[in-house]
Length: 44
Length: 330
Image 1: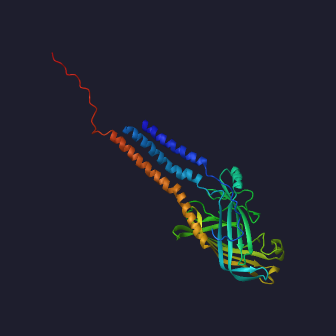
Image 2: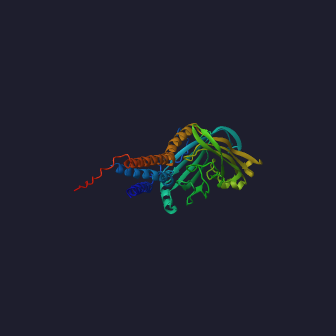
Image 3: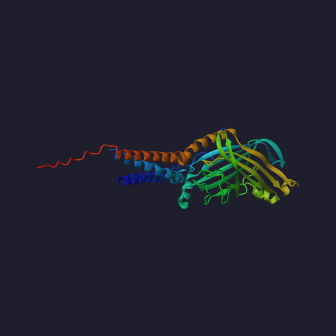
């Protein structure tokens, strides 16, 4: 019984961790102020 | 004490074993995304190209034609579409600016490309366009999906505004990276004149009145790093002609542009370095961590079982049994 509880705890923590990280998502940031280029840049 | 330790190890074993598929199949599609605020430019060159001189209406060979392609993510527009589409999208405003050897503009074609941030599938929303004309893409453009497969994809061609197959032609080594080579041929097709023409006073409408039409063909080549889906190198064998009408002075056709367009060397080096670092991040989520967690989970499980077995070993001294009192004989 104690082994079952230990396994269930491990599983629950794994789910909680992944769900929390994915719910936080990725940061979107802001639109770059740089223009669409109409000149040839010297370097990348 | 051993019993307690084996239970803790068992919990960790299940934790890591569960984390492995969750990371690969649940977290990866939700976290691996093209950033909405991406900004990137690439420079391509066609050396010894043929270019139409609009003053004399004759084609001439020029030392170099340069194409500057910029992509810029519009974060506000992406957030707005996210809400209606119900998924994360990326809105790219692009500009293909072509410059002649004298530094003057040859053509400039703006685009708006809207797509799913993970799968790269096109998303249709108001504003999707090429050179101001509304379009509905049914294929990918500029980039391939994460974990690109060895198969043909549908690829959007901005000049013809059509989607056609781009064929997988084999796996190659490109500067130390394993890449998939894709190729697409667009046959001679009549296309629209750009909204902005290189000569002042000439508009697409005024050219259309002369009866002259614009035709285009290209062979598009991409070397794609399959983990990130990013092209590390690209080439195009591009030809454009003006055909018929009074503009050509009795000639059937004249070459407007012909050239073998290749990425500039410094941009190749920059792209390869960028893709190599992004590749590691994607591999971390799709391979390194899932496999690592699975192995760790298995080891911890084995350790937990071993500890448990040691705790129950038959060789261990039995607890001393209470001695029964000897019967006393009378």
